[in-house]
Image (cartoon, rainbow, N blue to C red; front, side):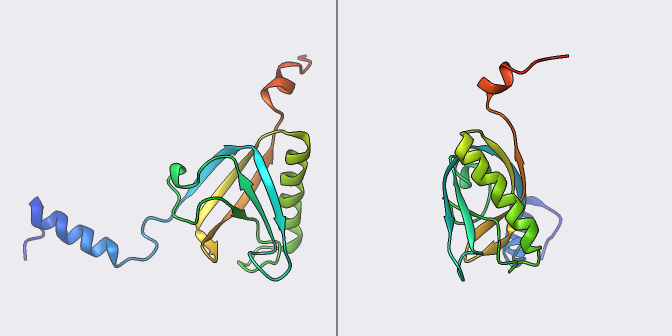
Length: 133
């Protein structure tokens, strides 16, 4: 076996990487509007939201369409912290402002990626009206 490079080296590298389950897991910050929210007891981490952008187009390896915030604490985070994130998401939905969410595809519930950080910020229309000092 030749591991010195070339075509054979590339083939061995691809085969080796396919054996490592989370070799390509990652996180991505997405700037998104919140299209819908979803709360259900006993499933999907108990609270989710639908971003306006595709997770697959952000390079994430998870089911596209929804992000869980894990209000049940299934993935080891605190329930109260998850509810604070969910409150930010709901507030952004109500006020029609975008949010920044860090989505982690290494942490999933039934294929849905975890949003492990949420930052609310004003829409460009509101921000342009802000008073500067």
